[in-house]
Length: 465
Image (cartoon, rainbow, N blue to C red; front, side, top):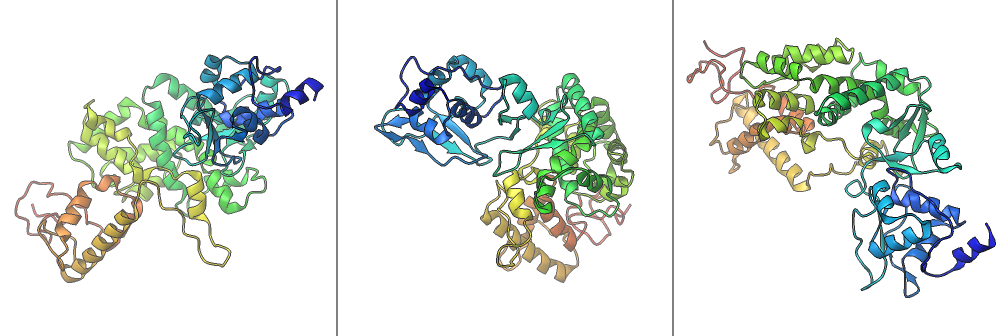
């Protein structure tokens, strides 16, 4: 480092005219990543740079702690000092850095510059490492950087790399030299985004669907395990690798499914086949099953998925039929992935999938975000009363006014049935284990008085004529 730069690094708070080096951000770069690169240009650590930027009365006004996977938010005064130090105009920094002016940090002191670190999924959206070769070409030197990435940006086409987020680290760059299917899927994904206004929504739904398939133990699934084995885990243990590599391994099928769901003609065929009746299970929509199995090249999915009555794919089909071509809020709901069907943040998934803790006990994963302990306890109470009703009556055809031990079971089950298509799959499976027809709809023939054993809801196969 030159003598002039040493003086700058040892100096106190930055004052105009600012720095002596011009350091520009990468497009889409995380603010913390940019500050780390800026500090390195001056031969400093991030901690020392922040001491210069957010100095208030001789103390750094910093909230939180820097981590390899965190993001830093600056207030206006701190942003002004960074702009002076890197010699880049504020409007350019605002365009290049998505989190540059996203949030004003809480101030520890009444006035002065401030910085705050965050690392949670609620505050920091999905990111990944920048391609090292691309970064070197843009900055003129080998540097590590982290970028906010959309799903289609995780593949670096020129260098055949997947830019993977790994919680607690700076990310991992995965070689795709032996993954031609992923490269081809990237081309199809970009084409889909160009020609369909629903591409991003369809991809989000498809990603939720393939995420649920990923964790199934289906004996006939061979493609994903083989694709996973072909990738270099770079020292990660197999449990963690299975979590962080899911998005990469399932990417070709996710793109194929998103392309199918985004098609207007396909949605019209699904609606026409339903003939105005919302499905009870996916088997009621054979056109959907055949098309989904075909697009992901797994013919056995037709049989495997037929009995599903919950999950993101069933929810999409249910809302698609319910919309019947309408463009109002009902029609938009098919693209809204229910909280119970959304992917866990990677850090939560890693915790949930951990096998054993230090004492040999199984580690309980973090509670799914958006779900409270009270909601889980309420469902457990309803399930216990439903189990008692089943022992006495042999089914869950529960009249609305049914009360079991002062518990309004009929009201609870009716509320659950009303929103069954957005229910968490594990809850749906728990009810189906008691009675597969717990959510059967009204008599499809419109018969008010049925001779079958169900009173409020009937088995389609057993319904009287």
